Image (cartoon, rainbow, N blue to C red):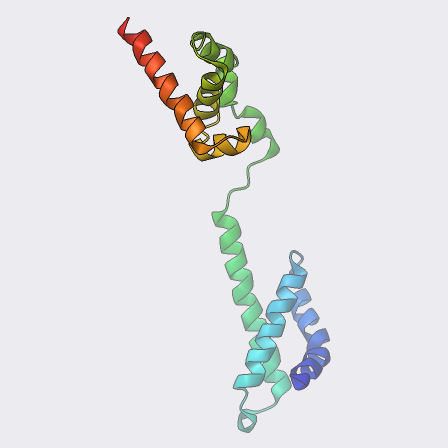
Length: 160
């Protein structure tokens, strides 16, 4: 491992030179890391019988970084980053029913306080029975009783 650290230190200027020659100005640290990966791969695949390591490493690193740059450009083209003006035109769906809680409570006039809590938690917040029990610090069966009582009263109101 020490030998690669020495190699990385020795070829650090070369990697930065390649990054500059490819006109990479975004994510320079990320591309430097890719350069180190390419250097490591080049050191593993180098055959001394075929020539000088410096030339081989330069070519390998440059090709590797060009491929990574191409991938990064494709990813950027595929991703859409909306302008700030976009968020100003998005309609707030919750603003359509600003009095939702008051409307819901108007139907709960015959319910007990705990039954109203169950209606509000389950209808407005989509909380489960277990979550309601944790919030109100009561047992799960207590919340189930609130639910059963609420349903019974609502069924009675609908039948009348």
